[in-house]
Length: 267
Image 1 (cartoon, rainbow, N blue to C red):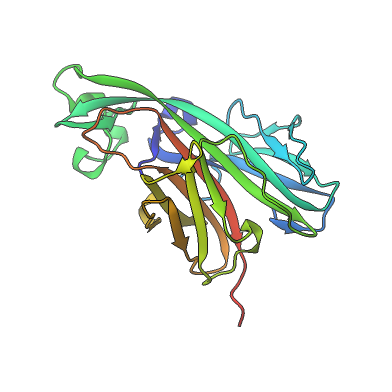
Image 2 (image 1 turned 135 degrees about the horizontal axis):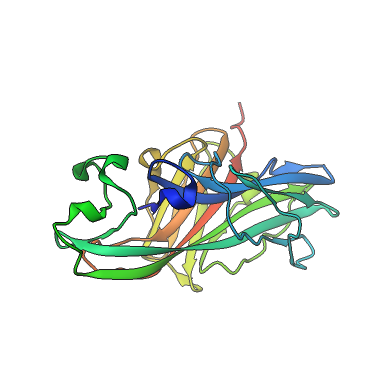
């Protein structure tokens, strides 16, 4: 699963990183009347490093009457807000964010063109993206695309209730309620793309702090179903997108990224 290469000018960084957005509440199950929610771009899963710009979060409470968060706080390292919990049941937290991505053809493969100089990135044989100086002249074949992330999470107050459906193009339907997942117990999911079984889905899991290289790939059946087992308790990111053929002309790519909390296995 290729991550977006975010340029230094946008991330206020001296290097080029592979960052992804996510959103997660401070706790996934609570009796509180309110709780903080944190979001941001992160290279290591669930460890916010840069805030989301122009974020607009939707909340779907247990009564299914959706509303938009109005009191976002923008810090350098994260975007945060206070989620009030007036009723019992499961709240769905959702946001969509997009970013323009330019691809260029390099050695008969399409690769992301990163806005960086040679001294800011590893050698070409150590990365799956390219920079301008990798070419003798100006790249002749380019394609402009959009990367769209749908980030979401679920918080249950006192008890669980039905999980709401968001506007994400890629939907992940859990057979087990996402706030009742237990380590070492199989969890079955159905992945849909525009309402249809997603045969070309690429599914990975990343435990908190894990990098892209440490992600666990999960096999997805041709009917869009998958069985996954979380090895230990803690927070995870479940990430779904479409498999990419590097030789095919690039197109807009959609991701769904869900933060989850996994309870310890029974002793």
